Structure formats: structure tokens, C-alpha cells
Image (cartoon, rainbow, N blue to C red; front, side):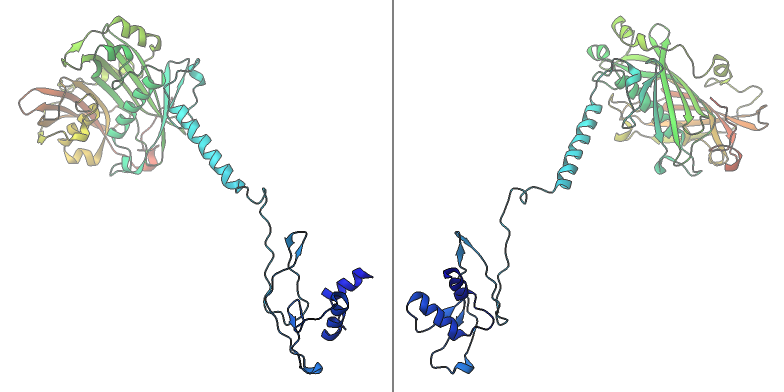
Length: 429
């Protein structure tokens, strides 16, 4: 009964009047103030009972067990309601799980890439996986393989990759081979024993046969390996294929010797260096002896041919970007200088089919060179029935010292539909 009376004092029934509520409150408290205030309802004295003025008034919320509660007024005249705010809990303060998962994944991928970039040598070379396209060692550790995607800035006016692009791929795979095998010292492809003796590699000769040229967006697969070349040299070969069809794009072979980077003189191969690189020697050849003999040597006249017009380009100077870490001009740059003096008619209507380069002297930053090209003559290609143009090239200092001698053969360009890439018959490798 007492509970009912207390509840009716705070929550009057729908039929109860303000006067009745006041009377009930008087019975409970024993006295009645002049102005009765029950949850914001104020009765004005001397006001007619039929016209009682009622207004909403802001008031502190009552407390239940020490906690403030919002008692919603049933009166339709209430003007302000404060919304309920959920208390802070441990669950509400947890971070966004999706953001946390993304952060953990990013850290994991960055750590995995960093570990891959480290110079480490696996127990079995075949276990090295080409995760980021840096290449991998295959065939019992004797061959290094790497893929390259032909980019838009690597193609020429005929929409195919330039010879300089392909030569850069050869150089890149050679350096990555040394690095992946764990033989990279502090030099440009030099082994640790070479670095101790201030020795560096310099190229002596390069021969290459181009069967077709890749186009923009094609993927080429480059295999490279090394072998002995006499007592003091090393041979490095390459075989470049189309990654999708497996057709041969280019074959190349080169001979490298050692030079002291302080005295700039050639050096014999130390036994310690031979012990480092010897286990990686592979006896196979990218260009057979028969194919090599068919390639004319620089300075020789073609069979049955006569020397014709000579072209010259003077005033060639190396730029800072043409130098490598050994402080001499990169060997690929020489090819561009050689072609500077080639007749434009040959470049427009023919493409390079083969090239032989003999490197005689290194070129420094302050060198001034001239490029000479002599169109040696034409000869019939018995296999294709087309005539090829042969050219002799000489790159020398303006003072007269020879830098590079080269011989090139050029074949007519064919329509794009007549073969893969440049339209030439390509043998399967």
C-alpha cells in the first residue's frame, strides 16, 4: 500500500488531477509548499482550477542506486529530452579490426620483400624462387634465368625493341647472376677475391645473332651462363626467347678479361678468383663454332664484295649518365655511337641481323670520339632469298686511337604478319 502511494505520487494516473496529486503529496509529507513542483509541473496559486497553467521546466534527473536516469515525461508538452549515452566499455574502445588486419599484412609483405633482397645463398640453387622478378638459378645452379617485359620507352620507330634494349637485358642478367650466386663483391660484378685485389671485369669481344625483335608488351626470357675462355678469360653466353612461344629471339656470346681499376692495365686471373667462379662454368655455347665462323670479323671485306661509301659522325662525347661504376663508358653505349654514323636508308629499310664487336680501349668521361661506317656491300641470303647489307664500323678517339671495331649485317624488314615480332622465321629452341 505504501509502495502504491509512493508510485502514485511520482507517476499520477491518467485520470488524476494536479490537485489530487498535491493532496496525496500532503498526506505523505505532512505539509504542502506554496508552489507545488512534481517533475516540472508547477501549480500557480489563486489560479482557477479549470484553467491551470502548466509549463515545462528543466530539472536535475533523479538518481537510482547512485546513477542518474532519464524519466521520460508522459506529458505531450515536454520541450527538451536528453538522449541516453551508452557508457564506455572495453569492447567499444577496441580499434577497427579491418584497419588492424591491413596494417599487419603490409608489415608482413614489407618484411618478406626485405628478406628476399638480402644477399643470401640457398643450400640448393633450384630452391631460389623468383618472387619479385629478380631471376632464379636453374639447371643445377649452372644457368640463371630472368624475364623482362618490353616497355613502351624501349621500342623504336618500327614498334619493336631496339638493339640497345636487348643488350641492356643481357648486362642486367649477367650482374644478377653473380649476385644471386652469392659471388658479388663491392665492385660492378666483381667477386670478393677480385675486390680484394682491385680487379674488375672488362669486355673484350661480343658476338650476337638476332632472329627476331620483340614488341611492346611482349615478355622475353633470358638465360645466361659462364665458361672458361683461355687461361685468363671468362666466356659468358646468353639465349633470349619469347616467354610465351619459346621461339629464339637472340643468341649472344662474349669474352671478359680482368683489369686493375687503379693502374687500368689488364691482369691475369688469380687462382683464388678461378676457384670462386670455376664451379659455375658450363660447357654449352649459345653460338656454335660454325655460326661464329660465318660472322665476318671487323675490318674484313665481304666475300666478293667491294668497299663503298663511307659515313662519319664527329664530336661524340660521353655524358655523365653514360658512365658506369667503374668510371668508364658502359659497353652498351658504344653500340648507339656506332649506329650514329649508319646511313638512314639502312636504318629505315633494314634491321640488324648480326653484330661482332671488338673492344680495343676504354673510353672515359672527357673523351671526344668519331664514328665511321663503311657500307661494305651486299650478299644474297641463300636461306631466305634476300640480300643482306654488310657494314664495317670504327669508333675511335679524334686523336686517332681505336676504341671499338665492329661488323654488322642487315636484312630487309618484313611485314608484321609474316612472322612473330618483326616477321622473321624463327626456329624453336
